[in-house]
Length: 76
Image (cartoon, rainbow, N blue to C red; front, side, top):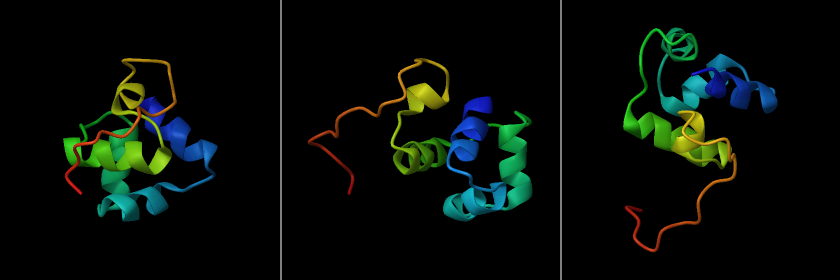
């Protein structure tokens, strides 16, 4: 998941800052960036919203960085 590293570095953020957003330790976030373990769906959603992109972009399913339009049906 080098895309999460690229997204973080594009915003000049530290692993610690993103880990706080995800409510995890910096060490755990580092494991995600180094592809030692996988993120949960909720964590992917949080990052996609934070970076204004899609989960598809984060997971290399598309090269389109722009997020999808909001759904009229939301959890919030």
